[in-house]
Image (cartoon, rainbow, N blue to C red; front, side, top):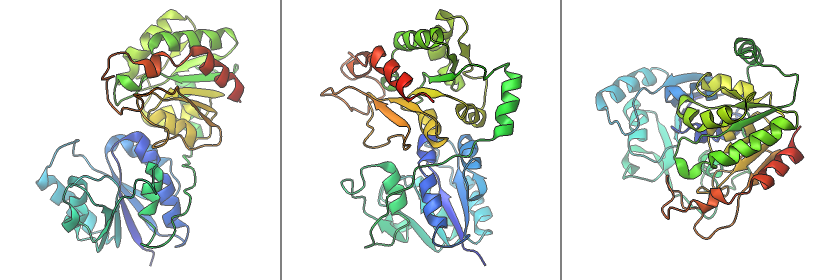
Length: 335
């Protein structure tokens, strides 16, 4: 009988994508274990596009919600699946409760928030040895004392039929090379390249013959609207697709230019040429992992600050990230 493994997934879309190498490593030496995922519903499209995921168990609890009764009810459902191991990727106390309630024999995760009693195998996080989030995830699958392998790059498998259906529904065409711009970032404005920079980039690419699409969630519409308004012919798709369709459309791009966001990681995971814009965050921690992904950033003393808004008020890390530099890099890497 195949071993059953449960992964308790992160809540951020980008972090969920970075958990794919853990799935690959878990399946590699064991043949065909069943690897299921407990994740928030907004991450379902990510795991639906990962090879090796057996079942997606939706965690309906919102961020910060304790909901002990609902956690116990979900744990009863999970107990019936007879998992032998659970890998708990978030470091919160709450994230370890359901595997504990479910009585999964081996519960593996990093120490944090006083949750040692909920884990059977507690790992100490060595930030120097594992600077990247993807390394930290994969290290959980390696027995203590053994060398952690270099993680493979995350891979998502786009749904070609869904992409074609979206193209028809949105009246999109692939007659021109496609440049997809992702001007949003859920975490906060400190991660977002200025709107006027995106406008200048979009205008240059459009005039050079690219079809320019703006892709993002409904929360990104405010960032996209001025870009589309400034350049007739640019297609604003923000809020018009679900996450899965956005991932599938990214797979059609000749080049993607994105802030540090979930869509940045999605573009890398579907193998598209990518220019990733970093300011308040660090490519040393959550870089896009792809041989065709390229980083655009400037060196400034206060970056990275990891704040949602610029604490100094000048926003230099993004404002001084030059449009020409980004444009030239996009043209250089474009397929």
